[in-house]
Image (cartoon, one colour):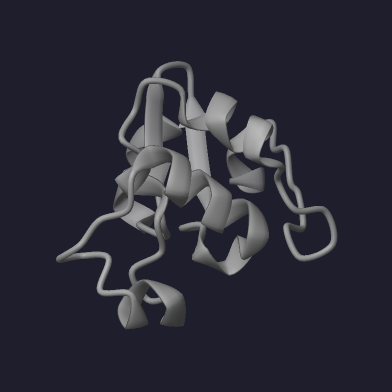
Amino acid sequence: MLEKKAELEERDLGKQPLTAEELDALIGTRSHLDYLNSKNELYRTRKMKVFPPSRAEAIRLMAQQPNLIRRPILRRDKEWVFGFDSEKFAALLK
């Protein structure tokens, strides 16, 4: 991304987790399910694919356990990419 001269805002969620309010604003009107990391242990043990949490519960859990948040999250204007996908990143940066 940097070689494309894209402006990048980076945040270490381990050191500076997102609050529930920040997550709510970030998710906006999009599906909260897009933000859940399906590779996370909590996601798997709670069987969130089969029993998805409500928006409020997902936000609460992501605020408590930042590793439950699917990363990276890239945004350009109204387009979003969740999780690492080099093809989607490239398309977003064109």
